[in-house]
Length: 234
Image (cartoon, rainbow, N blue to C red; front, side, top):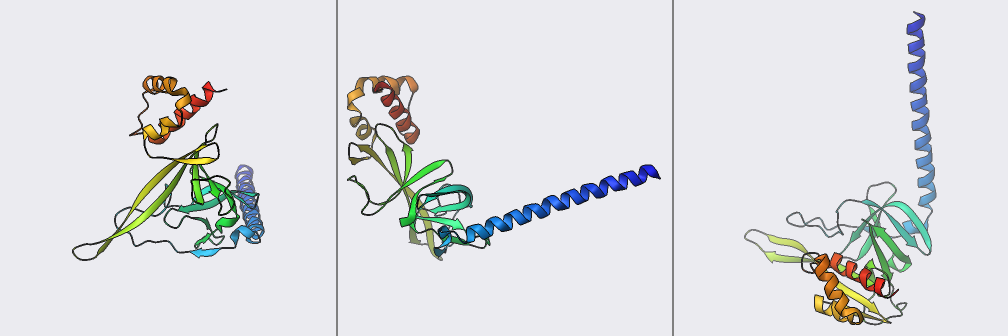
């Protein structure tokens, strides 16, 4: 009997400990939500996703599910918040505290955000000090002596099918290389190499040695070549 009583006492203590731990977690979560609910980042319009698409396409960057990310909003950093990036609307979406829907964060207050291991910078209207590029969010692929940006967009196309209108989504990526104070559009491998002409011979040898494939792995090839280019100019 003493042994059984001791076991029961231990089990009760364990249950009490788990209860206290869960209660503490809930209290901390409620406190955090209360703090965040007062944050200006939650002041935005309701996000209404376009769900009437055929096939498995979606309007979002990388994944259609909310994912943990970081936003710099009016100079303040918000970590570990749930985000989506809609490439059709060019809008960053924040999961509401009640988790019932999303809020479109006003873009004029966003400096940059990180999502899916990508960093997006916001080139704001009237505040961009360089030429050759439109305002909006740009994926910063590389930052060095020359910055490499990509503008990612999606477009919904409607075609008349046999029994209904078929709505599909396609993605387009436009690349820009910052040279001096101008963003140069990069549409091909030759366009890209032309902007690195000061290390032309070394670049060609590096491409061959590393077997860089600009058709199948365009972004990785450009980033690796920029790293090499910068290493020669240190």
